[in-house]
Image 1 (cartoon, rainbow, N blue to C red):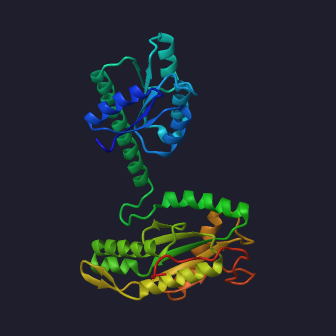
Image 2 (tube, helix red, strand yellow):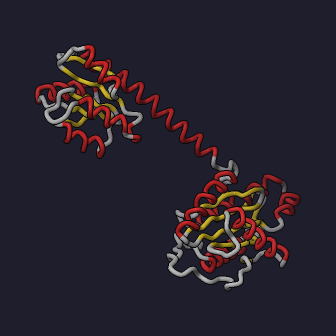
Image 3 (spheres, helix red, strand yellow):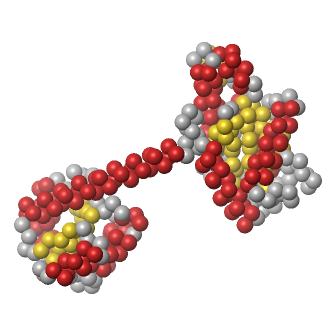
Length: 326
């Protein structure tokens, strides 16, 4: 049971020794605190799953500590057993109302203590399982099933939020719209299964070429989007050109063999005198992508702007790369 840790908070050395012995025999990991202040520091810094709190600590009411623990958002799955030498109904109700999950009166019996710990562990395990399930469902809701990139809806939400921040603080933000050239021909020639292979391999290239602060998503069909915070237009163009060369440099391996692939990319960025919303940023990048395709594909086109095509925003942090592919 080493994955289940119990915190024992009691100023009575004899009680701590007894509980420590019981827990060790039962196979539980534990650590001890003697005061409320010591417990407050330890519980906030060390991993634990269940706490046995003495009601009468020398410097703090255990109920106050239980309430503070229960109010912390990171401790939602933790279990608290209040331990006290008093058998007053009012005290029990107060403790349970303010955060305790269970209550044991001193002197306690060894079998009863372990039974209550086992009951607490079952609840903690169920809560952890529920949280893990919710996290998996949340991840599935923002992930494209085929490419495992972020999906269109999540991209739109994050772009809107990031665009607002960029506007508020006058920071640069670039957006690349990437389209696989002649993808319909790949599907028609080799079948949709091969087309799916191409999409997945291309997605892996894009994912491996971005920074942790960037967001790469499948925008729809064979079109992808890369949102690049703190990236002025000149750096966005340089990144897009590296992506274009990377895809062009070698055929993509599929179940029917290597398939040559190229991409067309449109780039837009803010600050820009004619871009005031996240939607307008997408439209501008899409227009640049359309020009790249119209002008022959396998190229990068940037938004048209009166103040110079690729002028860097003064004061922007330099864009750093994380892989050799960039």
